[in-house]
Image 1 (cartoon, one colour):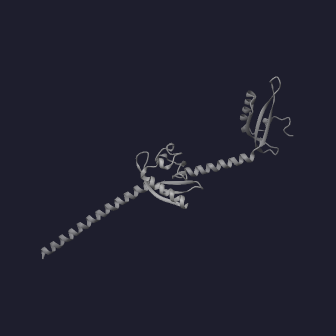
Image 2: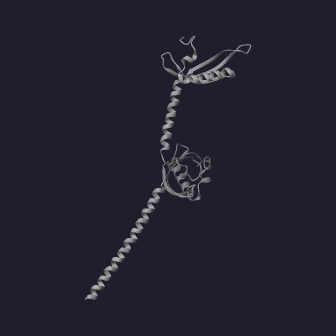
Image 3: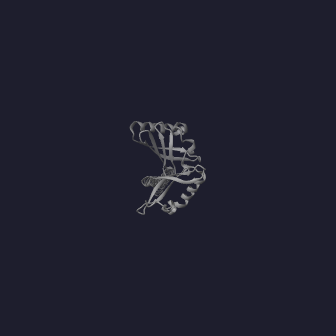
Length: 238
């Protein structure tokens, strides 16, 4: 009863007023049904979300004489949708902070989705593998390896971990550590970590160790020669 004789717009949240007036004018000009969702002030003074559907009333002469609007409370729906959006945002923020590559495939190996914070880490651009089977896109050098791991995962539903090397889009050789596991009842998840820097560091350490070993061997040889020369000099003095 508090609504009778009062302008509909006076109950709207200030932030929704301009857009609602625009929708209202559009409905009058087009004479077409319009829908909108706005915050509406309830009897207790708090705002609730309502979804409104409006249609113009036209008399026999074609003149607009009013508008019929039906509304329903969608506060819980909006609240639920906001919670979903916030959850998705947290998920995306967390996911974007993870440097690993992720690929979701069907049990038959068709790529459905992927996550990548740096697309230079991909062997191929996304459009060349999404919707395709891994046997169509993976290079022969690693194809049999992935094929074997996918088979094992489908058999025992565990996690398969392995390393491999492959050429990137830039032509450089990259090194990767892969974890493959079941994802639900009909999908496979592959988590790929770039370990190129680690492999390069390991090779650098290996080279340093080999160099140090050769230097020690050369030093030992020189020491043995010196000892031998000293013995000969001692014998010569006697």
